[in-house]
Image 1 (tube, one colour):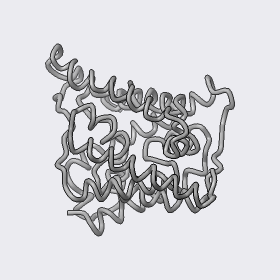
Image 2 (cartoon, chains in turn purple, orange):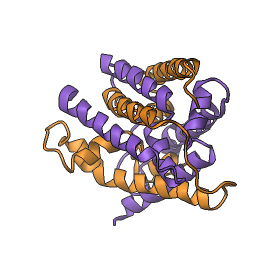
Image 3 (cartoon, one colour):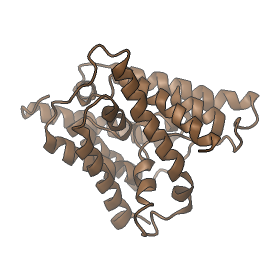
Image 4 (cartoon, helix red, strand yellow):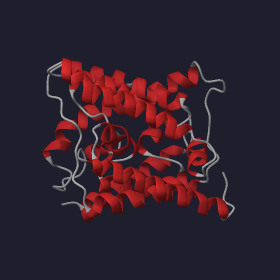
Length: 135
Length: 136
């Protein structure tokens, strides 16, 4: 296990703890946001995005390179028809089940084993995408 | 915090939905899954995923007032929804963490459009499901 993997593991611990603490490991809480009853999700996402914004846009002004090497590169993706079509499909699945990839992993951690078939279904969906629509 | 911490130390975007495709690369020979970016990131993505699971477990065992917990969402919703989440996030190249946290924080307009789209469709779907009397 190299240093980078240790950092990823520790980062994952913090991320999972935060998601669970914010209630996002529970599909019911996510659904209550999507039913517009509770705005905790957007608040949590806003704070997480703010913290990450500082890491991506401000820290690189003072530190030339990531501490363990590599390079700082903001995330960028081209906007295509698939970006939006995929977002529509994801939104429907999200609204139906209250699960998204990160929250479902955290959900295992809080003992919600009901999410395991959901994660298996996510793998199947990702496979179907790569097999039939991948380029 | 977790995503920011990883980025400052390694320059990597610790996002979630790519985990599915990169992990499939261990099993599938299809060229789509054997692309270089997947092979290079598949190991650290697994470390991150295990961390997320254990981090949530630490929460359940320490601060959580209720300990371990199980959802009341029906299995059919978990299965059908999960399939659509897997398909949709990969087609869109991002999910709530990739487009939502990393993408918006990178000031990517692509991600902004993706986030607005999946929130609108999530809200509509959740309302339809609720309207049909399927709870929670």
